[in-house]
Amino acid sequence: MTVNVGGKEISRGAAAVAEDKKKEEASKLDPSDYSCEILLEKTTWDKSNDKSFPTDAFNITYEVDGKICLDVTRSNKQVNIFDFYYDKYGNVKKIDYGHGTISPSQWGYKAPPKKKRRK
Image 1: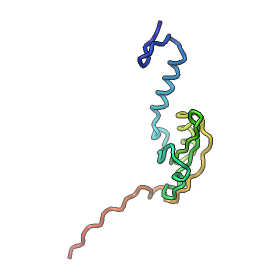
Image 2 (image 1 turned 90 degrees about the vertical axis):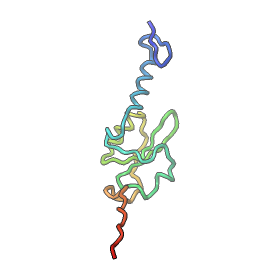
Image 3 (image 1 turned 60 degrees about the horizontal axis):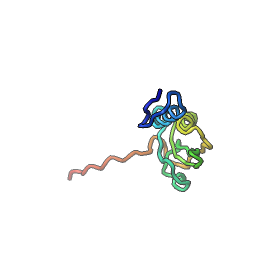
Image 4 (image 1 turned 30 degrees about the vertical axis):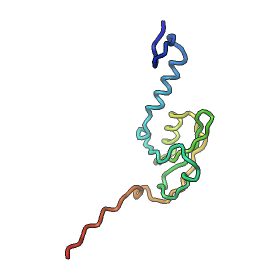
């Protein structure tokens, strides 16, 4: 008996069905479920060393298909970041502190526009 998966006829219980499900699950992961926010994804080392990031941002190095990637992600706890990247990619190489200097409560804050004074 065969099953139609993504337009392909695959015999029931084949390994390809399991691989397709893993890829679908990985794409469904939402960083907010792990209390994380991805600031830069698959970026360079120079861009990740920017001082305009918040102090709670981390540099995450991981491997996907033999290629080393770097992300900048913010979260309160490193364990949340590790859980997210391990569930999504499965191979976390390193988690370092970021180089940001902005307070997390002030990061992304825009000053309100000044109102005109009456004369």
